[in-house]
Structure formats: structure tokens, C-alpha cells
Image (cartoon, rainbow, N blue to C red; front, side, top):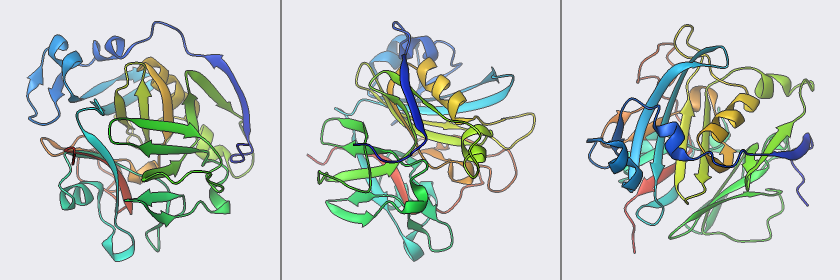
Length: 290
């Protein structure tokens, strides 16, 4: 039985059939190869094992800035990279330390101790456990295998499996094509769910590609950020069939070795690429080890 979060109400509205990644990519001004940074035609982008891009425009009545990486997990390996306490660092620094091609910030953590407060499993070793204080939003796992990834809705405090690489986060936005809706206005949770913030997510589409996505925010006139419901709508617009919300706010960072920080992290209060926050874990894209 799925325990957290207790506010899970409805998993009823199915995504519209016929929504594919190509529909979203057609609206992106420029799509680039993940490894080389070379600009691609749409035909090339749809075949490429890894791409990245940025979309800016008006959505949900305000300005939005959305950056993304899409990869084929058969071509690249996705791993959890950890650096807790004194070893914690920015998303880009953790990725560079481990020779990654790209990465996105991971899950929730204690900001004073720089240690995870959700379940994390790295190289077969448990690095963190989901705390009671995270049960209002942590209800899913990102799992990485040698040739694929999976996003599972589950109680992350009681695991009946021992994955090699896993990261608990939440809330689940889309589960096997089904949109998840959450109750609004509950004391202590309304700000997280219903206010606009920078957001990060990991998702998969019907073709098996993995998406790492950051929505920027907290920058008037440049990027409003999104509520959880708005982020879910965006995930559907991108053609995702499974999507898991990651840590957001000042943590939201998307990085590629070929281009640097792709989004506009907000921790420095400036709409530029330099406001990264120190984090204890990331989801990274790396060359396959075998």
C-alpha cells in the first residue's frame, strides 16, 4: 500500500492520447546535441541519443523558462551521485567530480547538515532514509538500471526491494499515463503545492526516453515558476507518461558538460546561470560502464 503522502486524492484523469515529445520539441527554438552542443535539425533531434534545449514564453498567464535534457537510456547511463555534508557541492561540481555528461539536482535534504531526508541508494548502498517530515510529498522512487529507468509510486519508508540506484522524491505527477491530483489548501502544505516556485522533475515518455526538466522561477518578468498542478500539466504537454517531482526552489539546476548550467538558478537573486545551491545528490547522465 502506498502510504505517503496522505493527501493523495485522485488518479483518474488520463493523459490525452496522441501527445508526443515531438509536439513539444516543435516549439523549441533550438535543440542541441547533448555531448557536442551542436545545433540539430528536428529530424536529427528525434533520432539523437541525447539532446537539450530551452523554451521561453507565456504559460499559465505568466512568463516561463523551461530547460530540458532528453536521453535514450540505452545509450547513456543514469546514476545517483552523492556528496553529503562536507562533500556536498553544486549540481555542476558533483557532475564534474564524477565525470558526468549532464545532471539535475536530486531530492530533498537538510539544508544545515547537507544530508538527504529521503531514501537514497547509491552503488548498492543506502545513503539516506525518508523521514516523517517528508511524507507530505515523498511518494515515489526514481530507479536506474543498466538499460532503462523506472519511476514507481510507492511508500518510500518501507521498501520491499533493494535497487542498485534509487532516489525517493515526490510528489508523483504522472503515473503510467495517469495524472495525479492533490488536495489544495491544507495547512503547512499549501505553499509547496499551490504557490509558484522553481521546479525540477524527472520523467519518461512513451518511447522510453528519459527527461530531466527544470522550470525556473522567482524572477519577475522572466520566470514565474509553477505550482505542482501546473508542472503536471507541463509534463503532459511534453508527452511524459511518468513524472516525478524533485527538489525545487533554489536547488533547481540543470547542467550539461557541453554547455554549462542550462537554466537560471535563483539562489543569487539574479536571472543568470550562476546562482547554484549546494546539494547532496544529483541524477547524472554518464557514459555506460558496460
